[in-house]
Image (cartoon, rainbow, N blue to C red):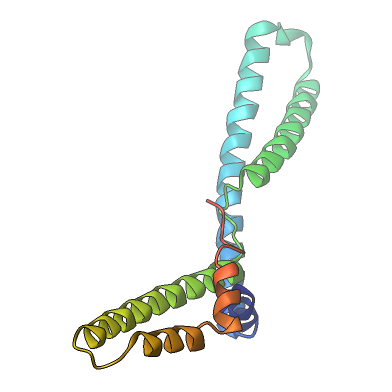
Length: 161
């Protein structure tokens, strides 16, 4: 099984679309929490810094409100960009992750089957039940284009940590 085959299979699965949608919704909730927290933190820090650094008694209440609104808008935009750049919502491509998991499981099963086949061949050779030519013939038959493509494709699409 290649990564592309597994990915095509995931694109045909309706449950994968539901998982992707759930990942987006949960990610947006996480981003919203981080965004509000960072906005409050930055706005408070700037407000306190201005309160300490300047004499605010010269400003009217409306001017102070307008200044705080401007500070809030700037910090809200900055922190929103920061949240998405830092991926605080932990958004991921569910299709690729599930396809890669399926390929890894397939590789593990294939390694286990090959290991067991090699063990059985070793025992059969040990007791002279088969010959070296039989082993070579089996290995040649098992070297199909699909298994070669699988080996070449084993690291394509691997998710980055």
